[in-house]
Length: 256
Image (cartoon, rainbow, N blue to C red; front, top):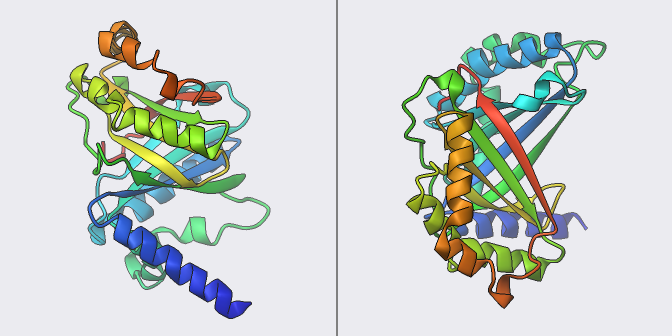
């Protein structure tokens, strides 16, 4: 059994390393927390320990986001989105952090938290591969104050794997990515989820100057003639069973 597990783990890494030669791999870490104390601990860890450590490893353009709904939600969330050049780079990071003394010093209160006072309620990681039509993360071109920026994370779940393939095709060959480019929605990434709790699904992140700009862009998208035609094609019918929309602000220390 151990040999089988080792074989499949090696195969998994080879497949993703090969697939990601030209396309980014995205890891979205989702921290669930309940109170201000946990939020302060997470912010301190991410700002002073984790992001600096990633930057030292030349892993850049790390996004940290907080849903606007956190203000009233019982289950509050912080999203950390990290682009990797390969799945292997993602796997190597934990061991590299262990040997990073600057990281260990800065992260001490987070790493050594008492079980009675943990820094979060739960955490999860979602892994994605970048779409062919958007192979690398793209930084947004926004000019308003950072505090006003709106980031919109969308997850489209499909009823089956085949319907999921149809939705991915709709973004790529179908031209949905091109429509977002045409309306200047400042899309940051599009990804096919390969490991997560809501599969089969895809996720993507767009960005806007402010909420009014966000609403205006979605109206333009809905009125787009190419989108209206695309949305009527039989091959793309019923390929989304659930759409989850999360509107967010970037943390002050986020890379973008």
